[in-house]
Length: 594
Image 1 (tube, rainbow, N blue to C red):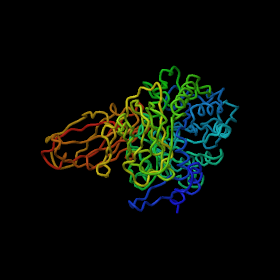
Image 2 (cartoon, one colour):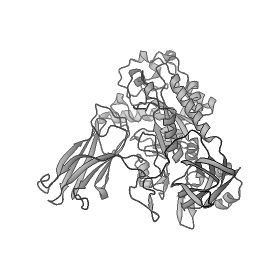
Image 3 (cartoon, rainbow, N blue to C red):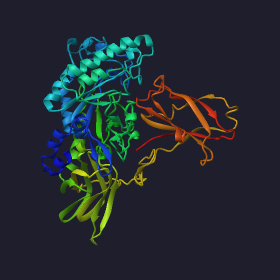
Image 4 (tube, rainbow, N blue to C red):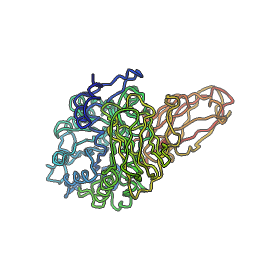
């Protein structure tokens, strides 16, 4: 019935009617291929339509010039005398962000709203004589400027001994029950006292049971990480989504609360799209909080456009950071960077030469005369799910033959296709591999002047072979593997288990995902090793949640979701046993990239 209605309605009324007929959690059954296509709920659909959102990161760490608050700043010095949440909203609007995600509480535990859950917060500073409430002001400004509000409340809290990457678990177990009550109070306050909240961020996941609070007060919000997650972190802070960006994956991975883009599966049974968080201060550096003399780290417009193409342009949502300084304002140099970024997106993509949409296995545009083009934008009706698995962009050449200029896999909410300039009168999008009949909201053609990008060609061409998803397929080569150890027949003197550790500190210098692989010297053989009791020392604690064992390849996948601190080592510890006395090989580490 829904399909019959869908095909008969006009394109002008399509978005409104789709919202009305598609409800949270529903799926469409494709009778031809017997596939169930997971669909976004209302909150996910609203969030994906933002395309761009803005982080606001301010904390006592801002006064310290650090990335993490070390509690060295007396509260009487936290005086952001010029703080103006209207200015934050104006900056967000300058580059068409649809939501502001405010860091209301970071790792140090400082709270920017009025709360009696802690003495470490804005109420105990001189700002507005202790009566100030930044979250309240921001909520009012968002309403004024037509922006949605998202809230980041760190599950941990250094003042309780629940440090970086803890997910809220206190080092002293006798404090756990007390902190659970505090965090539950804080989360309830930010979700109930400041109007609608459209996104909730649990950085590094949340190990405190707050499911009841989220079900009651955040049922219409998207949630990043934790047991109630319906979004996924991409797995890095580089600003890039995978070339093949699938919104679906397996429910068992969703249940972990820490799934990333690497778990994506176009035939998965649950829908949870990918968010790309990246700092503006990332040019030869990486800072989430303002510090003096850091303008050299500002990304240029061209760098931001490269990120835009590979985040929003690959169907993800871009979450770009902003860093108010100690006055409470976003610095003017940053304001200019956001405005230039927004203007460049408009310059390139606000005025297509021609566009269309529709359903079927191909769409064609005929231009009025031979015209130079170098970009195509494709967008699916994502309310009806991600359907296209592979596509090709072709132009009619001078000999009246179709010539391919771009081929890709996923489309989703948006796919920006760039190719070397060509002149043509006809251009065609062919959907060469699909899960169901393609429903294309937008097929638009552009000729963007002054762009000298390298054509975006896949290096492995496809994640598919005869329609079957390749295991652990990546779209572009990872960084080179580095040998960190080796073993031979003398390493394991008997058949017992041997405790081993590998110091990875100097190799794991960036937020992202890494793989440590044990491979036989003769690559045609299995390494002949057994493993057990693996754990990571990371962020100053021992953890199992940051490591995953991939048995088929004798590989450990490590996820670092928190900024690296020099004083914290990164060590892999495990027990190993050799299954054969002839076993020999090497251990390598590499960072996964897209």
